[in-house]
Image (tube, rainbow, N blue to C red; front, side):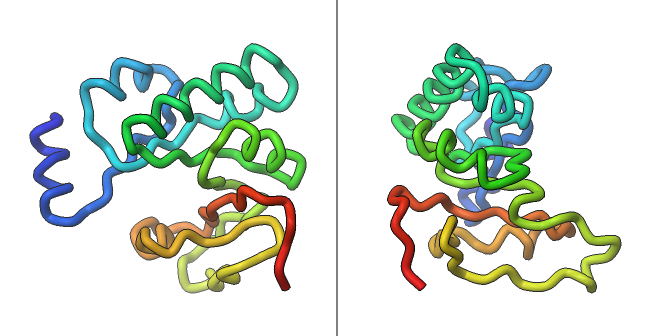
Length: 149
């Protein structure tokens, strides 16, 4: 499996491990598969909002990913209340209803603004909406709480 993934990466494709931490996608996969991005399962993201241990677990996952050069995406970011915890844990990107709701067809999707007061698009990755036929937005979190308009 890793040989196939590396073949894709050598051709210039970014590879993402989805639903990390749910079911079969657990910590050993970080060691076995060289990927560019890990999407952290929404159950871990939601639990980190209220639980100290769960927040520590999220922070540890992000720390491991940062140490090995893997970007992180938090799934199920439903509203602005998620942002402070995700920033504190060092998560780079967020995906979920806070950024946009799924559309019945890709033709109804509208481009998200490149900058908002809460988040900012990361410029060195291709726009994920070009590769995935849904309108759920993926955006990079600003490390600072200050905003520019």
